Image: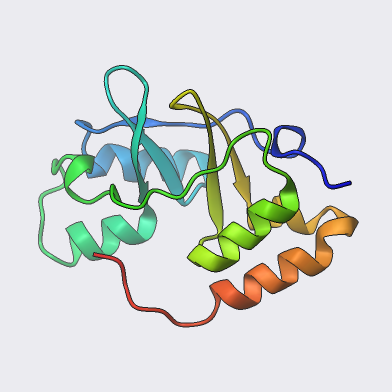
Length: 145
């Protein structure tokens, strides 16, 4: 039987408000050595996710100001997320299908954890799933708008 995500996820997840700036998001990423941050509204509900790549391509490369709100560069449509009860095998398949390396874990709209591909790879039962996910993630795809 595969582990539930609640048993392998990182539960100390940093979030950022949709009104905070891309500079604040980048500083948070730098300070904590992370590449993505769930974006929440005033009620703490997840409304998007911002990655270091989003900041680079949608802000910096476009000449946007450092004070540009995160809401203007985050991915908001088709937010891929998991639940704490999802098993790790399902998570690996979802990550492979969506070509993502990090998966927010959400319960009742609130971010309760984050699972990275590396979290799946350290579980010997999931080595093959993680390997397949990485292979799928590494396949070129059309960029999201």
